[in-house]
Length: 129
Image (tube, rainbow, N blue to C red; front, side, top):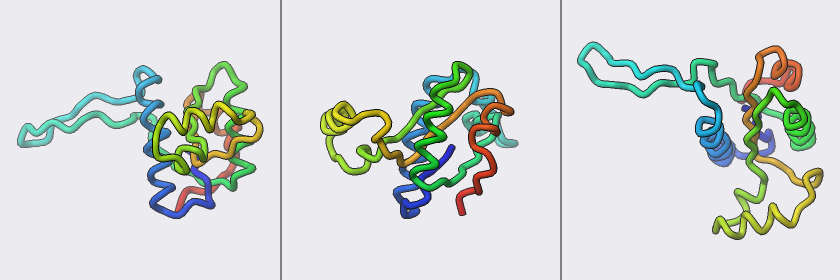
């Protein structure tokens, strides 16, 4: 997960969650098995791959998203900036639909693929503070 470093904490958390939702829905096998504690309470499975949340400036995030999207072996779920500037989903669809891909800024992007490929795409971005 790469989050726009210009976002305040609440909006960054929102963007990460919004990018995670389609990732979990689209990438089969991403979640580990449910587990029960000693009292038998079941806790849903978490991503077995880990959940690193990195930060990048808007231009770097756009470049990373483009690189990942160009690879057939990576899945990308992005959160265009319009997701946080519109209040109605139809307005979001219109805003994104009117924009050229290269002109879209992003709040966050989730990338799933072979670890070496994803590491090469994201480079040495810092963890979100």
